[in-house]
Length: 167
Image (cartoon, rainbow, N blue to C red; front, side):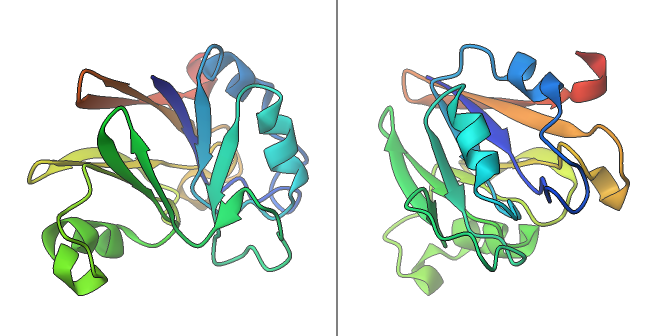
């Protein structure tokens, strides 16, 4: 399964729309996960023209009432437990390092998070930690940014960052 990961789009405050580069990057994905700071639900509608969409509520998502959005999305994908959140890298790492503090039996296999506007793909213990960065506001600068592609197959997950300016 191929999953497109996006976060911190901040539309229409930072950009008027999702950059067209995102559609190219997400061509052929089976699912899109948005790690929060969506701002307007029309962003999810636009992404849903490419593939089904789920999202985590960001700290700036005050008026985004939609059944595709939850504080946390907990999915089982190809046998792997995936958490989609908006919170910081420290909270994301804490889910992995101290699952018991979050009423989890074990660490998630994959944690996708946003909030920092900084892309990262990192292994923590046996878990994969991914922040796709921001497609529109990387490092809090208005320019083309990054998304990520997550591939899950045969019980293994791999992710890589896609720099939109290179598409």
